[in-house]
Amino acid sequence: MKQPVMGIQLYTLRDHIQTAEDFDTTLSRLAAMGVRDVQISGIGDIPAEEQRDILQKNQMKVCVTHKSLDRLKNDADALMDEHEVIGCDAIGLGSAPGDARGNRGNVRGFIGEMNAIGAKLKERGFSFHYHNHAFEFVRLDDMKYSMMDLLLKETDPDCVNFIPDVAWIHFGGEDPVEIMRRMAGRVKVIHFKDYAFDEEGVRHFVPLGQGIVDLEACYRAACELEIPYIMYEHDSDWPDNDPFKACEESWQYMMKLQNSFGA
Image 1 (spheres, helix red, strand yellow):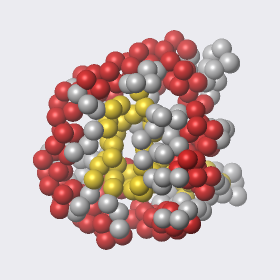
Image 2: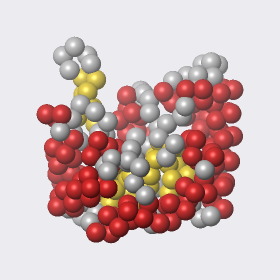
Image 3: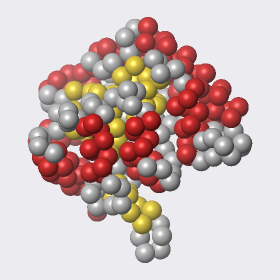
């Protein structure tokens, strides 16, 4: 089995990457932990050239980004130019807009947009990646298919890839490993995330290994499917309201998990 490269989804630290100075400080802290690969999402208005210089200074590589649907549809050429500067050939969309959900017509309209975006990116050697939440697993108006069913069936496999988020899949009532297998061959990056419920039944995101998602099974499947990257992501509810602490605890878990599989 080939083990994935581990890294951090910088959306976890989005409040600390809004300026070039903070971006540099954040990457320096991650580098000191041993992190060498990141996903960029939620970053401030920092020119691509400055991002590149800071990434190089901290010996970091970017496996994928998340960018807005508006830019992907209307500013794709400039977006690809920026990604060439930072040395990243994969561009992701973090979520579907509200008007792309709920019924088959909305979803199929969105699928048409995704196929067009993916085809345009592919022309220049880039790949397009869609990141799920839980709503994609809710049955649509016909009560037969979910949005994810249609995304997997009707998006062009040569142009549209996926970033499966294991916690959101689990929270959506599905088995993350099964969904990963259905996405086989279309995944460059998987998001590791964990959550638990408190005594009142409220969901809270927690550092990796402290919740109810079977991350060991997900890791084993990622190895078997030869998924190149695993990125840790933590949306909110950081311990002591400190996302760096969450990253440190989760990175330690990721290293133990990797070592337990013979790294």
